[in-house]
Image 1 (cartoon, rainbow, N blue to C red):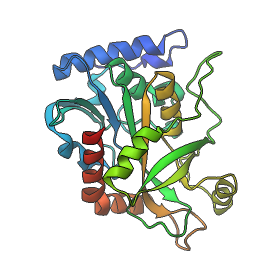
Image 2: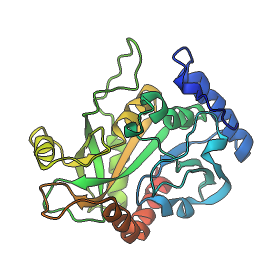
Image 3: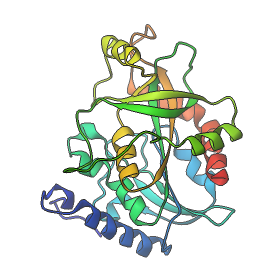
Image 4: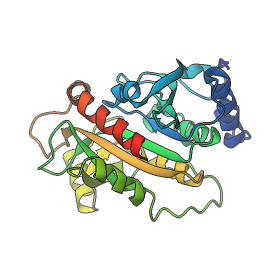
Length: 277
């Protein structure tokens, strides 16, 4: 449903899971598909994958669905798409991501994940464009997320909600991805608050505490996916080497250009992984 100026998730008395259920009902109505099996959030550089996954049932602006906001970032398409794979799996493709740096709070950041769970999806694939800490990585390289470090100081969990994150990024799903592309490397993703890029000292800190990838999304979403009982696969497109790892300044234009250049290869990879899941 279209939104009024008051966002439903900003009401502290509102139940975010009830709002996710409303959003799932909207998606069923708009797509004509009652349930989805897999959900995919397409981050910077991953947008072409939607056209390779299967046959599109419906595509519509995310703002037509309860609780969704217009994306603030170039490189995100702002739509939701229902796709059926050749094997008959229904995939919800989310091209509308709310980032934590937008200042709307964790509820709105993870609304898309909770909505995906409410549509019936049991697998959540989270993709992003990110900075790489390893010197051997190059812009345009996809990397599997093996674990994360949440440096936002926030959590989507509310109250005494204790969730085990030991195997948050599913080993089973990572093994499937490796079977599609054995050259895929893995790394620990560090989510910073943003929107400023990390300083060289912050990147060095991330490296010292065990991080290999730095970015501004995904970790909070992954926590919410696990809370909802979903199995999570995370993929980062290394769009640039992080501050201090390379000598030249960082820019968002660089991120966009790296994503465009790598788009066909990583999109084909993602479509093949989803078909194999």
